[in-house]
Length: 140
Image (cartoon, rainbow, N blue to C red; front, top):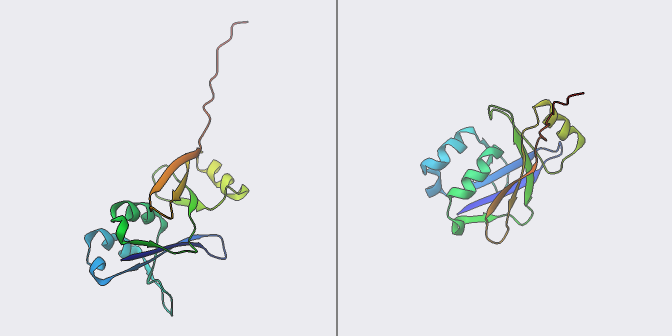
């Protein structure tokens, strides 16, 4: 059983929390995510804080019967990455600060990632993209 929660912290960053059973920890698919994850100490229901870029691959490659989404989890967020997919920028809403960062990175496509709370299906759709400017040559 895999428990998942997406939440927003005080600074506005989206946090992906994960709890795995012992049998799932030995799965080769989770090893990369757990190597980059941070363990959560204290009396939390979740064991790991995983980078958000692992959310879509984990949800798409795990059987839907084994996933449990927290009731208080975020159900959608916005995401874009730089040209080399080195840095990912995420937010819940398209704020002025987020859109400024988008223009600085060259206006790549911004995706809305939405998870259905009943079927755990993930939908990734483009909501912002760079407009193409076409210049015509006019004879005067």
